[in-house]
Image (cartoon, rainbow over all chains, first blue to last red; front, side):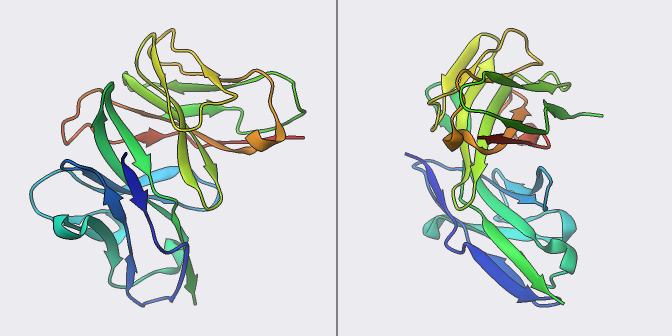
Length: 115
Length: 116
């Protein structure tokens, strides 16, 4: 079955520091990969997605992610974190099942930013 | 504005009192889905619907019902709520196409449910 793991439950970084959030997936075929962000008290917003082509994808708010098939990973990065980036981040996989297409989400990583 | 609207946003109820959380989307999306979010568990799918009158169970369907009588609406029904259904619920939708431009979930703002 498809699954997504995010090894880090909670990460704390200082403002201006670089950030990498890890995501690993399990899926037998080429996945569609997503990162969503959930700010406190808000719904989920799409940061970026990978479907095919260039394995380094750019998203909103200065985020990028790199798909590495050999490692089954899709790690999210940002070179310089801002205080407003404090939020929960979810990695997700889109896949085909018997009924069409569906999604599975990872458990999330909560990011705290120190001033 | 393209959006997914959930109501109510906040609800406190008691065990056994039937409730419905409504979800409506204005994007003519065929796919709709319900998730619950619990600390440390991320988003877990409750039910999803590929089209009108087509629904299927997700990972945690027990205690929930859904219906999809029209494309825009996908209500979540708790016939006899229990405290373990206290959670944050999200409705989401997407276009049917699996093309790169359309295969993105749009989420509602969430409904926080407390069952006493």
